[in-house]
Length: 111
Image (cartoon, rainbow, N blue to C red; front, side):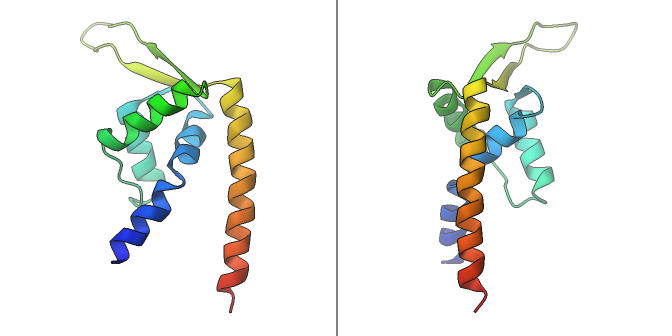
């Protein structure tokens, strides 16, 4: 039962976290998965089947754009995702909503 609630809570913040990871630089899928894992102390262990639908949805909403890298030497081409200006604005709005929600939760949980 605990796992069910944890999955629901995590699902609601994934778009925000992906946009946040893309804020500093363009990244490819595996890089996003690894950073999410490392920075969250393994709380967020995404699979390709979870991440890519998020990226495609963000791209469809014009919050990120993707570009293929050139193959250099033995390195294979990779699809990099980069946050757009609209994505930056959306991230600021989402972070403000997250702060209001988390502050409200903290006040309720104080009892």
